[in-house]
Length: 77
Image (tube, rainbow, N blue to C red):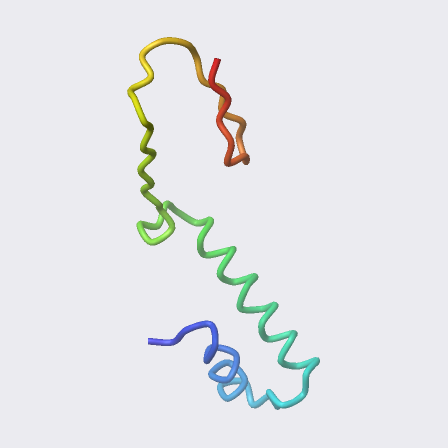
């Protein structure tokens, strides 16, 4: 299984490119990231899902919570 560390070398070998050239290496990494973003947006992949657990000292049973899209913060009131 390839990781991001060896993918640029694999792509360079398949395409006959010189990975030792820093411009070529940067371009290959950019291609890999672009394809990853394209593929990850096609559907909901299980490997892109995360499950997190939030623990509090005591259960919060009253009030409201505000969450902002794209933020890791919650506001309780």
